[in-house]
Image (cartoon, rainbow, N blue to C red; front, side, top):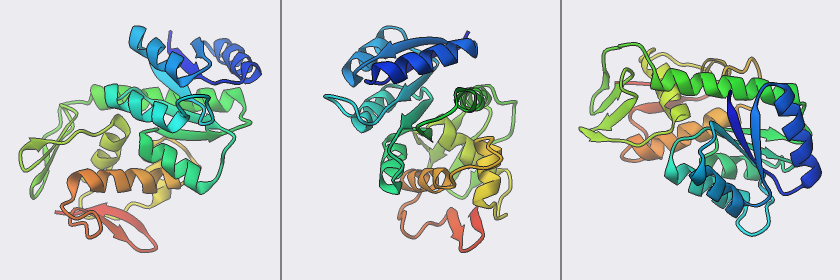
Length: 226
């Protein structure tokens, strides 16, 4: 049974989400502060972590950064803050997805299932030859990325995004296509794609402001070129 760690300081929301997700078949552990949640995840790692941004003490952004520094556990922000700055900041901190409150539990459950499918696919890919783009090498079968022979640390979501583009070299994929293929969302916030592209550029480009590999085609989308 999938285990979820819910880091949420509002007792009513934490209880409501816990009961709803348990009805969907999840085992849920709750934490009222980031500090408590970080200790709990270290003690007994959950399969997925849900994080509110407005937490007492350590805020949600720092909580995400500390979680991400430890491992690549899928992280979903569940917050009432829907400003573009807040969403981008949370994703840049290392979150995989962002859900705005109030949210239907069934929709949240569907997103969690998609997130876990992506995680399993990234770690159990079929044997596929390495995909080489000049000095950039992507190894789908091993879940690895290397730049000039040196390993590049990427999250599971970043890896799936890179593989999707690498499997169609030189072909432009729209944000909507990437959202559907990588996040498995028929519709959603395309800022998810933009922020993850930006994070990848920081890792694989010599100059992220003038990318050689991960290129924007204005008005169309993104492509990975050799």
